[in-house]
Image (cartoon, rainbow, N blue to C red; front, side, top):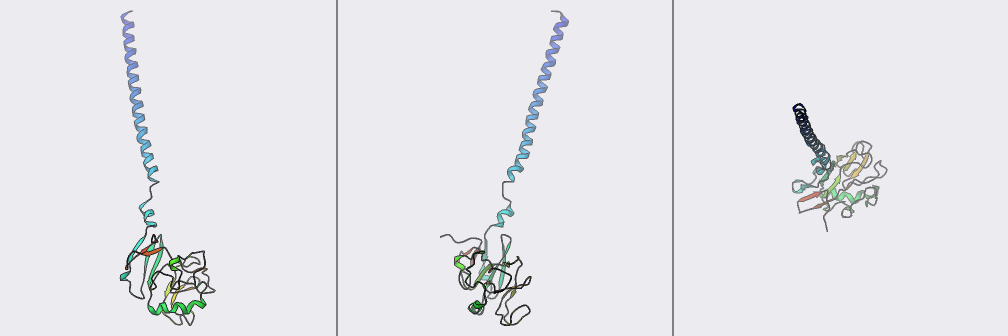
Length: 211
């Protein structure tokens, strides 16, 4: 073999080695970058399966210290994006509940479109008679009724009004137990959310007490 031929083979070998080495480097780099890219895509994709903090909070139970609610006072808390009323009724307000019943559409909460929990299927629609817990949304078109707790004649209310709530949107009226009066647009009584008392003064809204 001539010297020129030998040198040519050496150069070719060196060139092929350089090419192979470069190719390997390129492949390794490409794979590594591909892995990083896949990871970058995978993290948001996997994260999309994790519930957001807001989503977790949306259905979380709400605890309320009812010891600070005075008789005749109503407090509003949010549960699942809904306003929940916690109304501490006076003895005088509780006494009106029996007097209203002849004028109510569903005095015993028998309708099932918005079921009333068994522990609230009573005249006062509550666990503790003085504390009324209800979703403050009219069952007609979703407006929020206003307080009309003062008895007596008033605009948009009957002359024998004993106190309760008025939905100003379309005129539906409810007594202090959230029961709708007859011949009103609202088809049902106000919703009673799941709730229980963890202690004498601690109300839990959004959960029912386990057996």
